[in-house]
Image (tube, rainbow, N blue to C red; front, side, top):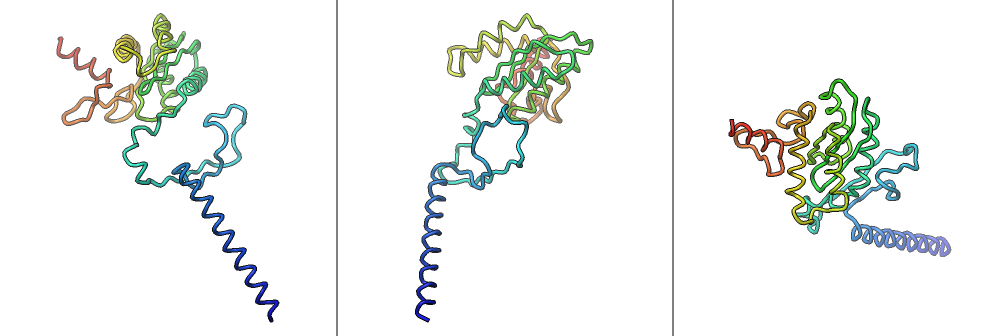
Length: 221
């Protein structure tokens, strides 16, 4: 009887110790990240070394007090050059498209490509939607088959959002790109570039360059 009680006590202490260890690991994980139930935290978001994963992707997030007010910075850690690389590779799958230059800023994607397509509007739509399938949905995408604009895009390769006059320069470049076909509207309430279309009471922001250009053209007529 005494031996049985001793064994039970030892088992109980072992279980209690294991629970404390697990709690300690959970505390470390919560301090390190607000992501829970992550199946695999290793590797890159776009891993070219694998031919596909054997598992689904699942992550559970819980908002904490320290995370409140940070929604605008969720995508600050995006490797823009890697995203530009993926977009460019995807666009090579579009028929009649080659020699693609892609610039990813903090809120736009600019793509200049060469094509011998007879349906420029369809090709522009396909290129644009390839990019839209990769980036966060709040990005705007501008495309052009005028490959004379390629050097203009490449000029921004080594600059960043905080570079002097970069925003104004990119805005001017986008206006030139808009002279090329942009494809179909992305959705109801959005134009071909993913911008909110102008209407009464909308929340169109200052980065909706296509909509601004359209409105300015109406006023000058």
